Image (tube, rainbow, N blue to C red):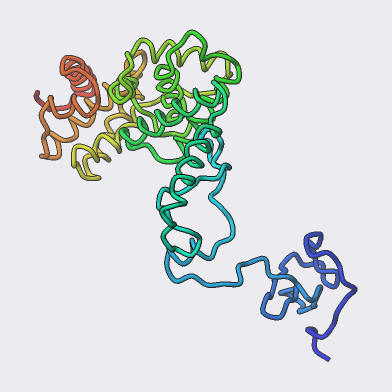
Length: 315
């Protein structure tokens, strides 16, 4: 009799962590045989397992969508979290056949009332406007989905604490995006958020401070290193320039040159110097536009770095 023929009394699989024979934690689930087996001694710990996976195969996205029996995952970027139904505008039935003309007015009325009922009160209507604004602004800034989700969560928390009253929706949306981007290590300068959201820099800053204080958000200050990779990518500069800029920033930190100065200005100056030293010079205007700082700030930071670190680069 082999070790695979040994069996113990049936136990709940979720409760099993160790083999009862050799006390090993290396357990393998064999769904072809429906068994839970110890990989060390070969003991069959449990039989007749249920395979939780799908019983169908899909060879492309369309087949997967048709055969799946679950809906889209919950998302905070929709006011109802994506849990409500939606009546399609295609005017086709479940079999893909065109709906008769006599039934189209009825479908039109159903769509209209369904759309009204999705936002039944002022709070939901406010969320619809705000969350669509978050999607639009994040899309313009090229921010990933997780930042959009986090911005939506922050806005919902602000709405639940009644922080929206007396403030513009666009202003709180912009502040939520700025906070979410910093929280998830995709920092954007406040000027960049202002350009994409059509809200003034001062209003975003004021709303941001309110969100941090009232929602107790724990956000670390941004550093110049956070911006180097993105700025170099937008300027079509290679990894050699990026590495040189990071080396310059390291020397600046050792000399405490970064204290009390804006991180975007320091990052822009470091990239400008690194590009000159690497023979891939970019104009001050190009770097200032990408980094969101003025050319005067760029020149001032340039002089600070080259003088203190004794770098032989000229404007």
